Image (cartoon, rainbow over all chains, first blue to last red; front, top):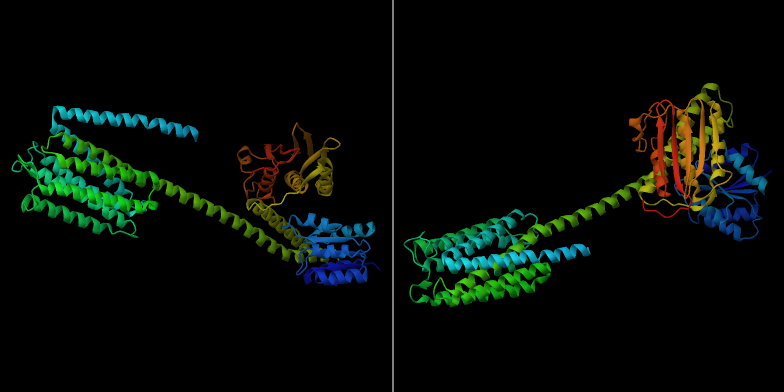
Length: 122
Length: 500
């Protein structure tokens, strides 16, 4: 079973995303802070990471950088969750090492399509 | 600026010449009749004294300077005494029972009042608020007592004795007055930072001329003599300069002050306006958060992931979803508009293929168009490289096409890309309901919805136009009512930073 790590501080969003993922047959790992996310990413080697950009403490960009700098991340695809208001987030996410981005609010009709595109790529 | 300077330099010559000619003319009148000369000279000073009062009085709420208000009032009374002095002058015949002593007494009284007023004014300068009533009462009392002591009690010291000339009182008084005036210059210069450089210069010139006039008057034997003439001419010029000082301060400076205040409030307004926009932007961001769960969970339930739902539930949830998306669109537009208005929008400028962007947008609308039975066509060259903000360009194009889809029920919608010399034109033509001529100008206003039956935010075109302007381009609309519309976006091929 493929495993996806969600790094997100908002409970509702975690529940929403993990619900959709589980229904589609994925195993879901959850982390509420960047530090926790880096640890889980390196230990559990998930097949994909969904990364919220606005996190308390170290943000999603820094978390992504730390995962990438570890060199043992195995090139795991990271999808950033960006917010519409922060126009520059997309560009910053890509340059921090994310492979793509999803804009919040998450659209349940299209999210799986996007995720599977990245899993296949890996 | 340069032209203005030379113009002002040129213009000083003519008034100066006129002034000299007037003084010469005035002198010539003295050859005909000294009484005529004296009357004209005094009337000139009196008119100026009254004008000073009128300007200072009417500008009292504008002048942030007690000095000029006080002097303005003082000159009203100085002018009044000078008026009586003129009427009392030897040969006028208005006060038949008095001789040449009377005008001299009035003269010296007026000069005392003038010099003391100039001195006191220096000290009033620092007072925060002067009581106009007290000043008026003070001067009125002084004038009344003076006139009584001269005309009624006849206790005012003798100033001129027919045959012998000026009395020591008069001569000493002129020296005292000169000293008071010199003192007023001294105190004035000590407070020079409170005055405009030019105004201060005029004041000092005026007081120096008054001193010169006083000294000239100490010499005369006859009230019709040469030193009397020089004294009067000095007085005229001195009054002229004090008039300039007060008029400039009273009329010209307050305007500058008002202008400065206006500029400041405009700056404040801009800051507030930016703050408002930033507030709306961050507020809207917060409004989006609840939409995460509304859109997310209605989507999940509609997909049947949480279990079967019946057709009625599906219909109702679809309405929730549609409303949530509408709200999202509205919030997004508001965020963008307030960011543009607050100057906080970030553009990402890079080269991209406009044609593949158009194809992508065409693709994303294909299903919606097919559902309505519309053809969505694209007419474009194979590729067209554009250096601009891809996302914003797409946003405008999406806005055009979603508008076209909303207002078109049959026929086709065509996207057309035409490369011009330094620009590119992207137009979207539809065969929809069209827009009445009188409504076209309203299209680009915020919250203008011409057809209220069709759902929209009313912000789409307003935002698109702002974005197009931001990218150095623009939007035009052509339409024929009931036949269809064409919206055209023009963008420079190479984005250059623009001031919006």
